[in-house]
Amino acid sequence: MRLSRFHLSTARETPADAEIVSHQLMLRTGMIRKLAAGIYTWSPLGLRVLRRVENIVREEMNAAGAIEVLMPSIQPQELWEETGRWAKFGGQLLKIRDRKEAGYCYGPTHEEVITDFARHELKSYKQLPVNFYQIQTKFRDEIRPRFGVMRAREFLMKDAYSFHLTDEDLAREYENMKAAYIRIFTRLGLEFRAVQADSGAIGGDASQEFHVLAESGEDGLAFSTGSDYAANVETAQAAAPGPRPAASEAMRKVDTPTQKTCEDVAKLLGIALERTVKSVAVMTDGGFVLALVRGDHSVNEIKLGKLPGMADYRAASEAEIQAHLGSEPGFLGPVGPKQAIRVIADREVAALADFVVGANERGFHLAGVNWGRDLPEPETVADIRSVVAGDRAADGGEIRLARGIEVGHVFQLGRKYAEAMGATVLDEQGKSQVMSMGCYGIGVSRIVAAAIEQNHDERGICWPEPMAPWQVAICLINPKNDAGVIEAAESLMADLHKAGVDCVLDDRGLRPGPMFADIELIGIPHRVVVSERGLAAGTFEYRARRADAAEQLDRAALLAKLG
Ligand code: ATP
Ligand code: MG
Ligand code: MG
Ligand code: MG
Image (cartoon, rainbow, N blue to C red; front, side, top):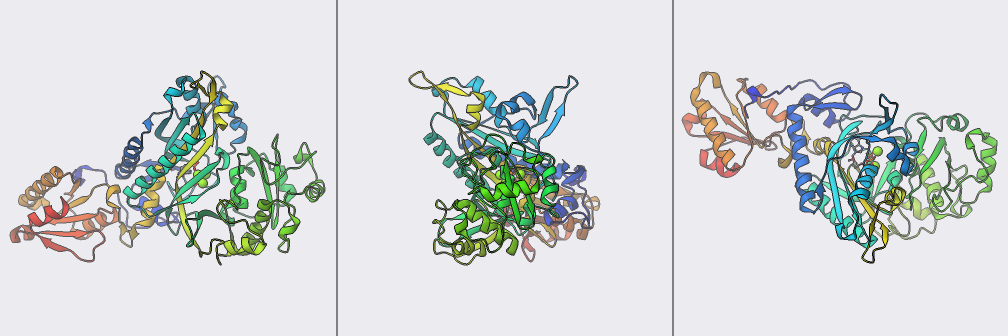
């Protein structure tokens, strides 16, 4: 590749509206261009990086036995009605009408579509297990799209869905996918961590997230030095941005954007929901938290409890709600800093109460912690507080806090979708069985931004080698005046090409300063300078992106280093 025939469009200035370094650098390098809020064009440079990530993900998914498919991004409303998610998914679902007024959505995820595919394609246990994946564009109407492609509305995801006869087999594939994810993030050259997560709106019994560690991460992580324990922590501010409306005002807005999914509620309140719950609304008013469960959910389904006998909470007065809160054990009432664990029966609600207090006091709280599974049962508020406060974990280790960017998520969904949509196969005895499902996501486009957060310096991006747009930049000094320089560079490039190294030739004829600045800004791991002077001395100037100084190498030494 010759840069003179490529489209490279870099800028010196840091864009004022980009808050984090990856967004700034992706704009300065021209990797992405904004079309609308949370919607970006990938330039030729950006696309090279995106494709590298995509290819590594694809290779490892194939190696792990998953099979690639490509599903539509536009999905019919009827399918989402079957699972009840048309009404319950919330504001992130972009709903569309066609000319016949039929309802569609732009897919934020593909459980419905793949389950529909599976119920038609899979008839016998002999076809199981199977794991279908795709690398495809998603749309989520995020409330606050920000940080460029990090939290975009349109983004590229790898999503995989596995089907099983038994839950044991699902658990096996879940471990297989976790292992594949570890290989993917290791190969990408990222520093990452797998943590406990809530299964949230998608639901299910077991779920873990993969986080790239970075100071700018939207998620807080807590891990223990005494065990493998690691969990997601959320900042209270991130979960509930902006000033909080009074409860009564918020109540009127339940069906508007303040309506939350359970995932949001779990995040907001910092608890692990053990099972899937469908739709809840939550309103906060200072330290006062209340959660209302809609529809048919029992206390078992949601640890936050419910309001019995209150058909339409939206019509209820604040006083009525208060009265209900006071009368329902296990329901979280007004939370004050002095409220003790003993007044609340349910341990998760108790933990939640304290987390809310902790969050109020400290600005963050723990999420994804399932007491009793991840940590010993807390006996006192102090036990819980000790985790929140980072004093001592119950496993004897120290709790460390770090920030992370969620780049992957694996779930054991179980039979939720297959049940709702009637996805069955015949077992060995010829009996119809609902299939068990897993789903596994990776934020392909987010990884690009996350990698930059972790790999940059004051001069620009320092790509991990496997993600770099090119491994080597061959910079030509005065190419227009010196045919020998071009010839030497082209022959070097041909040899590197033979050795499987992807090179770009900077033949734009820029002065060395601006040329080197561009090559450093776009993060090419290796730079070789070809000049008349060097050729006369029989050397090339070589510099690794992160090295302090350049070295002079003869051709053989250079090829040995790069080949
Ligand atoms: P987040 O907590 O960041 O909103 P999520 O939990 O909603 O992410 P999942 O449903 O688990 O996302 O989707 C799988 C992956 O898709 C995530 O792990 C993340 O890497 C990526 N992803 C999700 N939302 C976005 C977004 N708005 N922009 C870019 N990537 C995203
Ligand atoms: Mg999300
Ligand atoms: Mg998440
Ligand atoms: Mg997730």
